[in-house]
Image 1 (cartoon, rainbow, N blue to C red):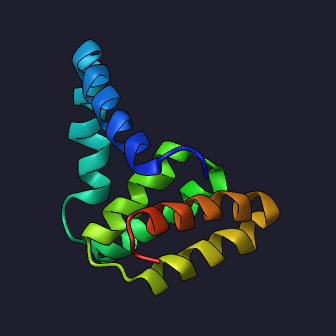
Image 2: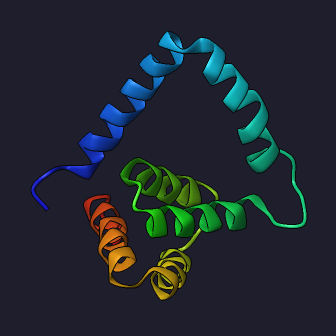
Length: 116
């Protein structure tokens, strides 16, 4: 991969912060409500599991920002490389070769971080 995913993630974070400043009403509504309801309080599923589920959906959907963000969040919640790979397998089983191509981004990101 020619583009540094670590640099992409850093730029994504900076741009995201700018977008929250420029669209404060939307950011407040989305992040104080939806995100808190999904990732906030513990429920029947722990936060690591919810992040892995989000990663599977992101891989299936092909959202680059979502894939990188959810991979990072899963790692922060203690997900192992094997758990992340199995999550990608689930996404691939539902999304076929398109999801497989997006799952390779997860692998590139993990390689760039020195985790694979």
